[in-house]
Image (cartoon, rainbow, N blue to C red):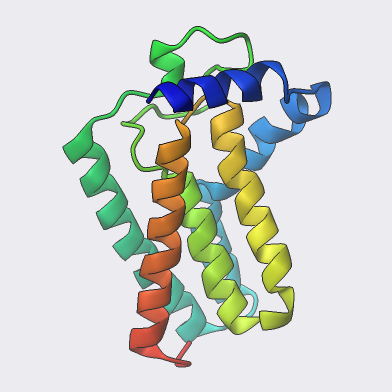
Length: 171
């Protein structure tokens, strides 16, 4: 855990900027439950992609079950509750402070990137870059340790890849 504290201090002290301080609290919410559910609803209502939406909703449920089982089993405190590292490490508006490990935002952003990349392969790099930014925002804002984000990202990617293999191109 010592390397994680050092990494977070560097992110907070050396790699910070006014622009990131402004943008990342907003960007981080794009990996939230609300954003994922809103995306699923929009894809269902506007595009009428019912199989796509159903698979994404089921995948979201699977991800949530795994992530929250681990969160409440492991019970790791969030960095902002145990570290004193400056004013960027703070609870964002509406942030629910459930246990830290693994990061649900990282899992959901990688879930979305992986799922959408299977559907729209030409946009794969864009999807993964966006997911990486959301995951990074969790560390930058002090809401997760790096290992929380790494574990969430691996779970999001791995569960989604497994789901896509099991259900093939039937999206």
